[in-house]
Length: 107
Image (cartoon, rainbow, N blue to C red; front, side, top):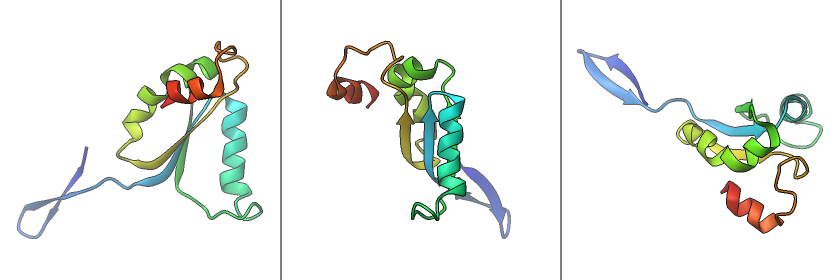
């Protein structure tokens, strides 16, 4: 998915889409707003630079983030350098699963 622009004598020059630093997949609206606040409003206070980012919420909340994050975030592979998934372990439907298994399931 590239942007085609004409330059000179009708030549088409292919350019990459603008790449953002980070896409965040949040389980709910509250998490989305908290992350947005940290990245935008509080970046200087916590000692990080402003970054170009996108934050989305999963319609199935915690279980969706656990079970479908890789598929959902794959569409951002070309437009974002990094991805972060944030969800609550409690409420994910997999409370009995250990941390290593959860990480393996997300990746």
